[in-house]
Image (spheres, rainbow, N blue to C red):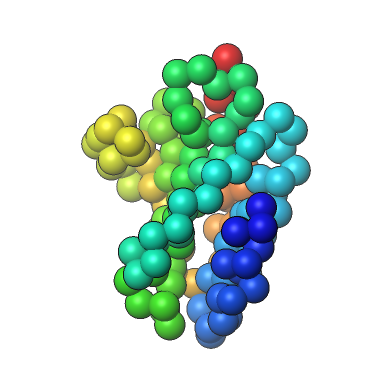
Length: 134
């Protein structure tokens, strides 16, 4: 967790408030019981937060919350899920064939803070968490 917290602390917020969006999603993930969080830092590419339910056997994660770092002044988020682990009733996600570790997934891109979109993503995270239990 120290690595994630250090990353957040050094991240300067911009007018898009994607730092705030990431913090809210991170805080939500921390509330999910029996979940471990892996953080994969690839500066100038992405910072990837990967939650895994401790009972998962076949997959190493149930979602990815990526901070895309191709421009540190305009970072944006891409939140991805395995296709069968979530529903997308508002149809705001993009179906990415073989896009999540070689499997079909849904990705939701967030370029600026949107409270409604954050709530929607939290619901998808909770849904994926529930469906990840094995």
